[in-house]
Length: 161
Image (cartoon, rainbow, N blue to C red; front, side):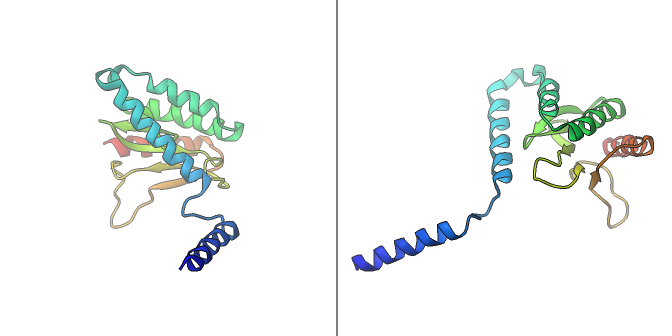
């Protein structure tokens, strides 16, 4: 019986060294850790949560991004603030996000976050973007033209109405 246990252990060890995938990528684990930290921070703030400088936290996170993503995130931040000043900037899974009544309406995901080839502007189910039986909830963003900025502004306004 002891030999069987040793054999099972060595098989398990071999499997672990042969495959590195355990269900989540390093980036996914980092995002989950970031979200857990965000929840702890919010809980610690308690009644002070409304006065917290969540916009400062978002701007600090944007400042950490590589230049290409930072430029996009800064511009999208400005567009969201101008289009829907009632949305509160906050971090969500380590990403800049914008919430109404504590619920995320939209977010910016840096291309670097999950090693993607483009950044993403996404909308949650809290966004009022319904258009028939099917509509987009995320948009790839590689650069922003004036037309793109206008479209994002319109989407943000529509999302909160």
